[in-house]
Image (cartoon, rainbow, N blue to C red; front, top):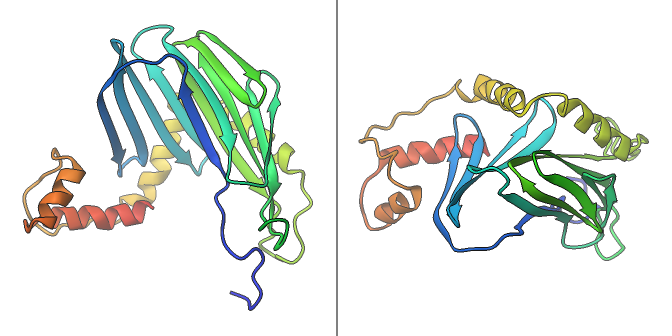
Length: 241
């Protein structure tokens, strides 16, 4: 690191938020991360409908993919937004996308990279439209969101930011990714992840507790139980990160 750092710390790009339009009592909530596929899944039941949300970050297509579906037709109604703690502007792009942009800074000082983030929705069934700074999904069977971003950081010469149009770069990335089906995007992502991730394995012995929730295994270790396989899992989780 140089003696003068601008800005003074790394910042989050932002937060992608999904809000259910229909509300009800939620049960059977389960969150899971599959280290072998690098896919995070959340499942729950509400008013007799089983919902699932699947998320992965594809280096192949340079997008984060968020798939949200219900097991009954026409039950997915969502409000999607983009924001961050400060210094940003979000606008609707067409009927199915949002663009957020700004410059990393600390209250107008310590100016850092300029950045742009773009999210676009693709639904099966139902309708998609933008309203203000939100994407609204109504009565869809499922919806897939594509998220990508770009900055003006110049790796070859950080003192001279890149001049490319960040919005155009993001739109081109999304256009290319959306030529693929959800299944193809996932297959390409998993193949590239496993090409690297499966190069290393770790076996510390112990009996297989893969069916026991991780939070329960952690509590058991805190109470004095021995779980070598949990240490191996933690090692692989670090590699995933």
